[in-house]
Image (cartoon, rainbow, N blue to C red):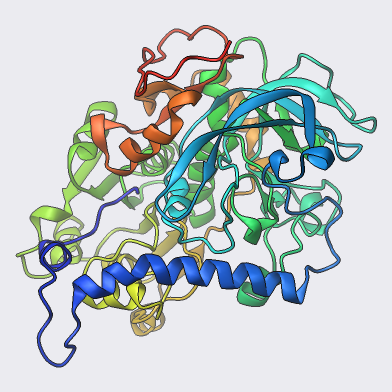
Length: 494
């Protein structure tokens, strides 16, 4: 959750069950009580529909292997078990023991995971906002590790290599992969419902439900990487895991947000969300020549942002609820009455701000709220640019298309970031000291405690911005890494 957007009236309604007056007559206690059931029912229905319709025939790697324990004989290595974090229903994750994965296809790589993390988009999975999750799915799409085993056709890697994985799974030779647009690979996700909803498929993704192919994630001690020689980048000796890990997603995603939306020399850039993606997007906007960067959020994250980047200006939206025009008016005031040149969305669409979208989300009438999108469209100057990087999974209502068209706003879906396009150059920037990923890392934790970490992260407790999750295979902490914090008394695996 990068940007908490529930206002006081909605919070009161949810806590007290007070019904909203005419004409709606909604009783919100009942609505929100039903939301979990509705989401679970939709997810289960989507999964059953997918099974009934069947997958497409485009994938060249096996689908729906989200946990080697689902078929131990077929997918599990009987010689060893591992700890892994699984989704076990809406708002529920837990640690489990399951078999280590084994080689299934000739270009597979089995990794000993040395580092993973929790992403804001993992919370969408926790909440059940992404369809076709199944109980027992292993989560986690950002991870690095050591090559443990390789299929017979893997090239360019050897056992013992330190590598970081891309969160997307690319084949390396399709139309999109040849252009380094790896997040849109045509051969690693054959999901039919995604194709019908979106008019096309994304690439397969680790730990991100059967909607994106059904691949076990890296919040575990081992994971299987299909097309391992495409989707793993070697980590040089002068870069510790604690920095290389974040090439997997957050650094590439933030970079893509900035360069795809386009930040010009001298621009004023507004960033919605002060989480890790927003933090790095603000830094990268300055790197690309922005004259000013304004970050919109609330609570301690704005203080954290100012501490790390004193040049950043901040807007606490929670202090503007009673002011005319709210965030839009404040940004106009700060930017010569016109508004920022570019707006970067680093939030997500599942968190409603007002009662109308809260009701529509709860009733399944939309999957995402348009409130922040409208705020961005209305805030930027005429012919300004709006880039969307936060996760939106389906459909939204009350979208201000009139402002978009009449004022010439460039509305850009940044898409899932094509990691392969950027990660080699971004690694060089880390080596040169131009990018320091540790600036966003606040906690170092153990994989054995990861279920508790999810709930801490969801509630923004302990000022948790970004975590580094170590395993029994991790190297000693590098200089600058936070000290290890335990959240359970579970014994550590050795």
